[in-house]
Length: 125
View: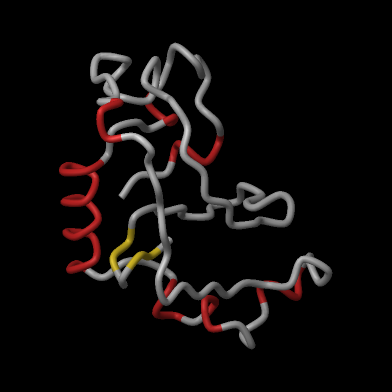
């Protein structure tokens, strides 16, 4: 997943059925301070409430949900082109920097909630 051409989430599909159902984009703000903020150590500063989020020049592209199946892997879709089979060295560096500076919670490393990680979590960049 890219934001401003910077990879923020990488899934290297090596046989795991992902996504297994139609995806959608949703935005929400919620209180995850008991588990999603450095293991509950960092608390929300409610002095800054109400919190808002906004999106500008948002675009999304994907295989239509009604198609599903093998045709979504067709070369007619740009994301199945060779340039998207992996990250460039520059993208790998940017991805690692984003994770280092901004990642607060990663369900793939949360053994308390997921003693056995979901199958997509075995993929690393």
